[in-house]
Length: 385
Image 1 (tube, rainbow, N blue to C red):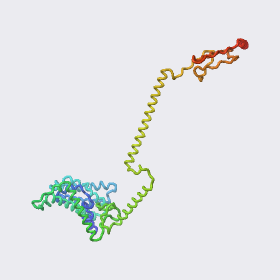
Image 2: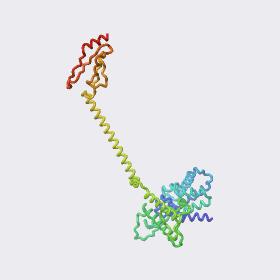
Image 3: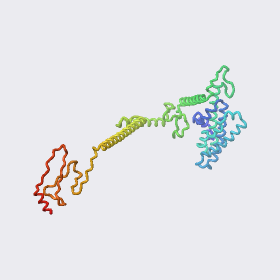
């Protein structure tokens, strides 16, 4: 029974789903325009939460682990449909006020979260009391927010006139922004009361649990980044993690000061990326310019070659073919430089002595032809015969 009482206390006070865990914010902010609507939504959710925890705890050993979430949703949706029909038949005014938020209870994170975190791992009786505690805590939160909004926005509480006749209602509190204002004020008031209680008793306000932040239900806690506790009773875990974080920051600063890096590396990542992109674009532009210059040079060279070839001054003419009985001129010989004549007395294979006339340009001086004596010519012809 102590465990069941603990589940009630945790759900209403210590682990309140509205003010501590900040769960189910959609119906909390939407339907709390009056205290009646808040209480009706809270009690409806409580009934569904208790019945779903009961059924899931009974079937926890039969539901396969791989399909547990779809199975939980089916169970919750079945009870939501039953409650929706009951409200429509017996309390139509509340059914009309809540509207679409009744079927949306199927995906309410409070119900699915308690089914996954507690009911699927614990016996039936503690699961039922866990549902009752969480449901009552949710009801208290919605009723408190609805009462404050109705009081400031209409001057009534549960449709009873509370404010005097000259009171001017603050209309914003019955609109959507008023829900955020009232929720923020109530959460701040709760935290202030907890801090004052911790200061009077000398016990620190619980920031984190001993395990880690993932198992902590206090979503208002900032962990190692904020300190909501007193100076005398500061959490040892927070102090240790803060010291480690400061040491890591100091080590990083020393490494950055000791390292000899380029100035550009100290810039933010976005500026470095911009520099790299600018450099790549400039290189691509220069490469494109070089390519265009090369193409322009090739086009100019080709036009010059075509012009010279059309003028006939650049391409050398092919040497004329040698006639029969005349020596061929070697291709290496330049223009106007024929082979030297045969020496006197030297015979050709045909047995005839050939004389080659050397033609010189007009600019050059004409040289006298070498004359061969008649005696030597006759003697060479006789030897040949």
